Image (cartoon, rainbow, N blue to C red):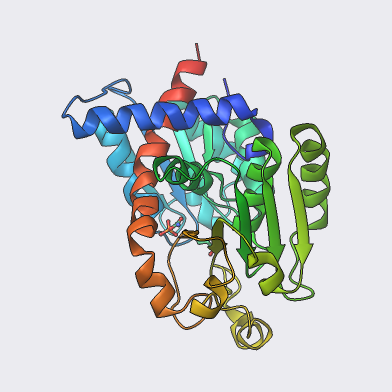
Length: 307
Ligand code: CP
Ligand code: NVA
């Protein structure tokens, strides 16, 4: 049995296999051929943070696969009132077939997975957002952008950055990360990624100048400057990140036909200009839709591995 907590635990071949599974289910869905592999299965979805895409894509995805999804907000279950994680994990995993969790500390999901009898999926922690990366890479494949990627991540060194760092390390492409000083990705995650990168041939560079990162990039990525849980830092962050907005002048430095990705929600006028967002809205909303297809691929893949 496998959990899906970070891309670190997966080989390049496994990551590509999950995405291929999702693409094939997507192709069939568009032809009205429905994969019902998870018939009679239940996915428990624990949310300790807000969500639009993650909730809708997992719930719709599980329904389309023949199963059922349970939305469990921590305001409604005893976890939010202090019932131990390990007890919650043992109870929920005795009744459900898979669990998806969106929470704060990554250690929470690790502890849950340790006590869970069924696969646990990370639907975002403070450290990682790996299901988003499945959708992002799927979108690059569909747009014919997966060869010779030179990716530039501009903004905060957050859960999205860590996930991009891990994807680059695993798949072996170039990733430049431009953040303000003091907002770099986590040093330990970076260290782990650099060890993996040595084997895959990935080139991962940190810098503080977004222009340097964008020069000749084929894929540009950004994310909010104020992640969930950082609301109190908002004022300070908006000052620090000035100069990191991806606008038309920034995009003019990239390779011709470079793509722009955003996991959403997007804050126009902050991490991205309205103009860049709207010019790239087609791929951005393909990326959002692909959350559904990539996660269906993931759930089917995890179910097949359970043997
Ligand atoms: N990108 C993403 O995970 O969106 P939600 O926060 O709406 O789930
Ligand atoms: N970095 C953002 C991603 C939202 C999908 C956050 O954690 O809030």
